[in-house]
Image 1 (cartoon, rainbow over the protein chains, first blue to last red):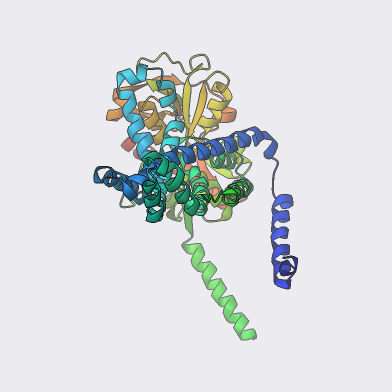
Image 2: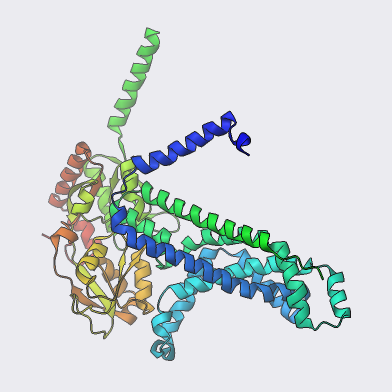
Amino acid sequence: MMRALMQPHRIVMLAVAIGLVLWIVFGGNWSWLPKYAPMIVQGVWRTIWLLALSILIGFALAVPLGLAQASGPRVLALPARAFCTVIRGTPLLLQIWLLYYGLGSLFPGIPWIRESDLWPILRQAWPYALLALSLSYAGYEGEVMRGAFASVPRGQIEAARAMGMPRWKIFSRISLPLALQSVLPTLGGEAVLQLKATPLVATITVIEIYAVSSRVRQDTLITYEPLFLVAAIYLVLAALIVLAFRKMEGRQPRRTA
Amino acid sequence: MTRLNLAAAALALGLTAGAASAETVRIGMAPEPYPPFASVDAAGTWTGWEIDLMWALCKAAELECEITPIAWDGLIPALEAGQIDAIMNSMSINEERQKVIDFSDKYYNTPAVIVAAKGAEITPDPEGLSGKIVGVQVSTIHQTYAEKHFGGTAAEIKVYQTQDEANQDLVAGRIDATQADSIAMDAFLTSAEGTACCELKGAVADDPAVLGLGVGVGLRKGDEALKEKFNKAIAAVRADGTYDKITANYFSSSIYGE
């Protein structure tokens, strides 16, 4: 490991990388940092919860979507497939704008919505951002889960049936764990992609970390330093996701009966 | 070798001479529509008061001008990077910007106004906007003004990439009011959508430090030659009536703001 790292071209590349980082850190204009620190922290937090919630909701939708396509009756399989195709076939930016400026602007026209207790939430932008991100994740992961459920060996399920396991138990004990095990690496990659999709919600006034950086850029007219900072933040977040999934993969119990 | 140098020098001379007679000035314009000042249609044709004025100024200054479309918040970086030579995009002259770029003399100046839903009890002052959500376009004097004067009392100052989006959200009821330039809002208030939902609540109190000294041509720091040309051209079109003639095509009264 160490010896592989110590090869001359690696050392040069490493030196270049370190030099570049040092140059950015010491050569850049970071005077704006203290003033915007609270906004940056808030932005990072908003990015994190948008990402986490949209992955949770999206995945909760993706499991039935995948199951319906892989082994459901036609009435369920067809709408599920249509949903995944539409979501995967249209740009996320378009979906976000359609939900926010389309659906969101229909609500105020309906008096009982405008007068309801939900209106203070519905008039904000984040519910539409979360909905769009969740639906998008559900669309992509629904397709992934379809493949995963389809790849569960039939013999396993037949064996479980032969032993008289009820359907729900077959799903929770056999299909789901096997399917999850086979797609965990894919899901990790998709989570990183989802992280990098979150800046799109800045276009509908959700102030996550990317929006904070453009705000700094627009206020101070400093272009590169805020962008370098967000790049570094996304890099750290992506690394955390990768590490978390690697841990989950390693921990996966291989049950032997 | 010497001959080669001579040839190169002659070529360089020829080039500078050519450039001097037909100097192309790249004018940065944001493609985001800002009627009636500047908007671009699907075919790429630019129209509006500011576009007409720009051609008039270029003609008066004997400059060869071309429009370079650049997103609003990229205009100043593009000017600094030399991708464009001037900004003519209703950019107000204020202290913050003067730290980074130079400006010509002003060529128009209109008040900032508050627009809100019909019948809403809103006045264009901190008390009248207390607890309300105010929408503004990013990087505008209106954003700075709203954050400075209404930030303390308003529920939230919401920042949009374009004024169009703020107007959309005003129609949708997601914001209670928006602050923008009076003439830009005039176009919205006379549209079918604007007539139905909203009305003018009045001009905000003046604050020259923020609201600035009117709109001028944004120029690179130290580009004195071009600044001089634009200043002379502005004075010329004001004097010979071209300015008023162009204004009459778009507005009912003068927008120079004496």
